Length: 210
Image 1 (cartoon, rainbow, N blue to C red):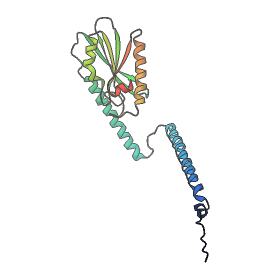
Image 2 (cartoon, one colour):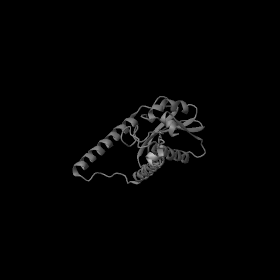
Image 3 (cartoon, rainbow, N blue to C red):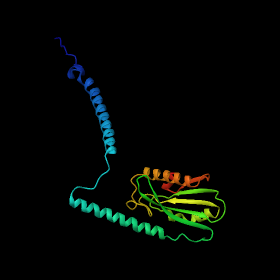
């Protein structure tokens, strides 16, 4: 008796070859989806950057809260500026003079600034101090007085939201704001002191700004 066995069908016959086509197709679809997501994210972020600055809310109730918050922020700025102006920077009063003034930053914010200069002698150079996060220019008074004793002039500026400067206390919208304000401040100092070498000195996060 002759027994015949049928050959085992090939896997491609059972799937009609679909497995070889479906997997690459799935990979291509996934790659296209990822590309679409990246493009969508780029467009979304671009739209957000071009949106106009938020204005005061239209609801009377929200307007009242908005005004209260603005009033509290302005009162806090006045209090901090008074503290900054009243900070004792004395010591070697016969050998140096210190002053404070307000400078308009890139965002039209009033930025509190200080300067220290020796009373006598030719100025060798000017050091512009950029303080760190959650600091203020008054913390560098002793360092500034040491420099004036070597006939260097010193300037320092409080960041937006820091020390006696405008802005929500301790809040910096972006370090780009500080970089831009520092650039404007340096231009002002150089224009007022022509021919004198100017140097930027940054401490902590101020070093990143520099």
